[in-house]
Length: 173
Image (cartoon, rainbow, N blue to C red):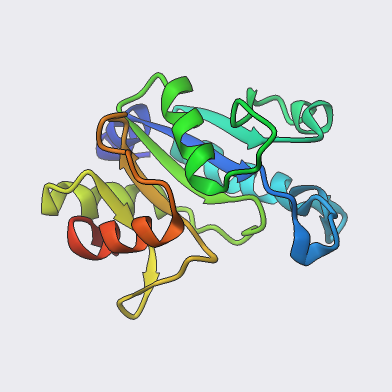
């Protein structure tokens, strides 16, 4: 790992969002669904761990099962299932680094350079957030992003606000 990669890694906490109700999956906890003999979150952990200094799992149920993955498990602080932004707020409060890199638990094919690329995109634009997107379109189903841990900055409460923010003040990669 290059010195630049180490410098990025040391400034970023990885956050895996696994806090939803999984209504589209019939209530089955997506992160725990097996793929090729391993849970989806196990694949995500293996991909993200080398890219970040710390790794958190945001989950609002199955805390014991997620705790088996040797990462701190944080919840949203209530039982309302308020969505990914609530998980991001909890992660910002728990993170010990200036940035968090947020990925969903059901994306087992995260690239090995995701965090470095997001960090570079944010740094080159001077933006507090960078979001992965496809051909210029922000994909709400894949909230891979890097955000600076400024609680005063994250005063937004819907996925639409994240899309708007990423499109106007953030940068993509």
